[in-house]
Image 1: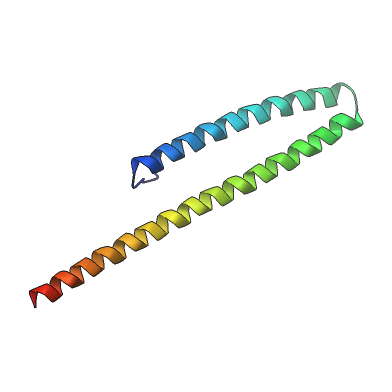
Image 2: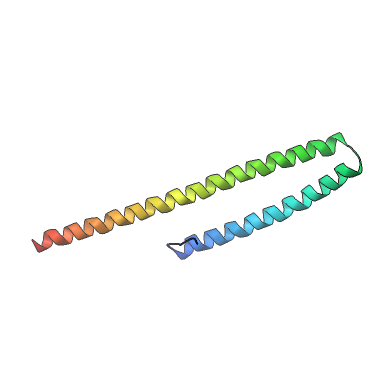
Length: 98
């Protein structure tokens, strides 16, 4: 389960998930039609479009993986920064007590 630090992160993730579902539905629709046409009669243009759709799918997966990795890196960096701030505040408090 993904834990979100802010409502903004949660909203971003929900929007991205909806966009991903929309992309998958559209991609499947086009792919099914192209495969149907390909089975009916061999056609060089249809075969080229199928190849292009495969390229689009792999490119999209690469972009999604990069986006998700970036989100993870930013989330981790933010958590590291917040931990450092908390440690610094604790150290300042201890110094003030001395």
